[in-house]
Length: 243
Image (tube, rainbow, N blue to C red):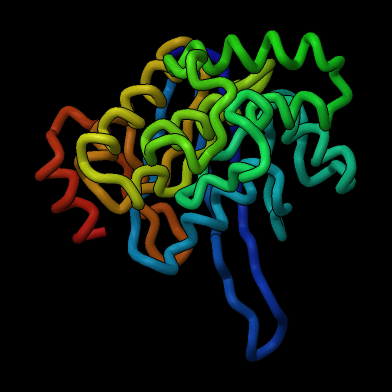
């Protein structure tokens, strides 16, 4: 793939605590995610998957090594600058969605833009376009409790990719959904990546990982394997178990 890398992680280590309580959550991670590429991250519980996402999106900084988002070295930025970088370049889709219950679908999608200081009219236009991209602009005035699980998840994806942000970080985004709705959500995520976004997907399900262009396997904070998806989901599940 010749597209530019949206995310680069080089020699990334993240430790917590000191002395006998020291925990090495990640060790020597080298990873690139390019525009138009969806990378799935698999591994057992406690392998460092969530830490990897937090570093990729600037919610945390590495103990050593570099994380580059676009052209910015995340570790070299102060907290305010990292927050601005997240709002403009990275979007998150969590298993529990984190939608604001008191806001409509459109207002939830507009929120990151308004927090970044965009005028309401422009934020509304970009929010409506993001909802249209996930085929939910007709539900713009619905509140989260008035929508199905799959619909609220698509709202979360729209919020993650509204405006100029071109990196989507998804942490088990289908974990609370049935298989049909989960596949629909992954289809939307795949479409957005095919349209030019970069995607990093944490999942425990090999059949969901098979939507990705590439799968990396984490164990004990280390990348232990990487593969394409042509082998099929059953082979991927075997690889995940062995990793």
